Amino acid sequence: MIVIKIGGAEGIGLEAVCNDAAELVHAGERVVLVHGGSHETNTLAEQLGHPAQFVTSPSGHTSRRTDRRTMEIFQMACCGRINKRVVQMLQARGVNAVGLSGMDGGLWRGKRKKAIRIVEDGRTSVLRDDYTGTVDQVNAALLNRMLNIGLTPVLTPPGLSEEHEPINVDADRAGAKTAGAMRADTFVILSNVPGLLRSFPDEGSLIPELARAELDAAIELAQGRMKKKVLAAGEALDMGVGRVILADARAERPIQRALSGEGTVVS
Amino acid sequence: MIVIKIGGAEGIGLEAVCNDAAELVHAGERVVLVHGGSHETNTLAEQLGHPAQFVTSPSGHTSRRTDRRTMEIFQMACCGRINKRVVQMLQARGVNAVGLSGMDGGLWRGKRKKAIRIVEDGRTSVLRDDYTGTVDQVNAALLNRMLNIGLTPVLTPPGLSEEHEPINVDADRAGAKTAGAMRADTFVILSNVPGLLRSFPDEGSLIPELARAELDAAIELAQGRMKKKVLAAGEALDMGVGRVILADARAERPIQRALSGEGTVVS
Image (cartoon, rainbow over all chains, first blue to last red; front, side):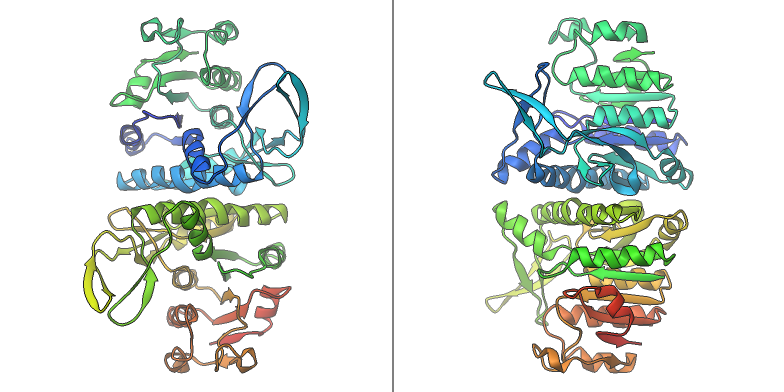
């Protein structure tokens, strides 16, 4: 059982990822794919005259401002555009893919952050109309049923809040929760860097292996979105996943390379 | 087993439709919902600077021009926006809804029309880059499996072509094929008129009942999009569906009213 998080950033070779995923499925492996949609959401939001905004927490953490309209745009980009593109590519490779958001079948249930403290121009305020949250529960039974009948799930945010609202959940961390709930052997997180770098952006400084105990220190080395991926790696291992591989999606055979140990292997 | 087609036009009370659908599900009925997204697609296409275009066939039939970009917009509107809105409303009513396009799990497979003859300013030409098609096969086994484990499918175009391309399929007719493949007792087609009118737009001229044999003549009375609904009614009946009800989605309790015989009942 392998869970593969496909990066949403530019430079990701979606065709190559789908080639590898299809090969695994045809070899009898149980595969669940997960993707986000930051880049597509930004583009669509700009085109629709509601450009992406980012907010900063008092602790310095930056995240997307997800008001009602942004959530609509996020759903269109993730569920409408990217998800169906991946499903189409897999279907074209003989994989019976099923694209699902975390709302469908209550796959990713979690809590909406009803009040978000933000800092702007040195002043702290509270946002109450934001649709951001975290995944607490994964409907692994439904995913297993789908895998049992030969379907390959392709999962995307949003998740579903306790009040049945869509919530913008981080796809890396939702992928980690999914891998954990499915008791996956391996969780592969693909992005447009070779893995965790000791001296970002020097790709020669790739850290090839890490133990769980080293992750908390390693998170200090992570830049930008890699921080979430390192955090997700820890969450997946803590839930019993065998190994997490932070790997490069830009190369040919990205999944095969990751599974053969290229990237940063955390176990 | 009931298949309900929700109209995509303005004036449809989606909340009322979901209230009724939830009541049926909670009473133990097997329900599949189907929707399209013409209106939302037009709005989004306009906002994105790629406004809807319509083409006319030599026989005078008008349909949406679905080039590559329009298909992307269509997927965002149908799969991203409307589908997730319906899923959210049903989840909020305690129904474990799963939103799926016809591409997912190969639910709606069909043929893409690779060459479409159109008439423009009196001249006939052929379009070869259009993604329009019809549903030939419904994966009823997958829908039944979902119903068996307590899920309520919410289906939307596009379908999947033999070449694994997304195809813009008419949701009324896809709903009819679904009802037929599922051997539904009833196929309800909700729209923003009371049913088939003898003298459109006089709502007092509603035809309350029709036999299958009368449908071919009745199609002459149908105006605009109602023609497809009458065609869909015939297709569903020919596949063994017990009755088709063309009913009004604008009222409170739209599904309950339809099931009690309000609208045009075809059997």
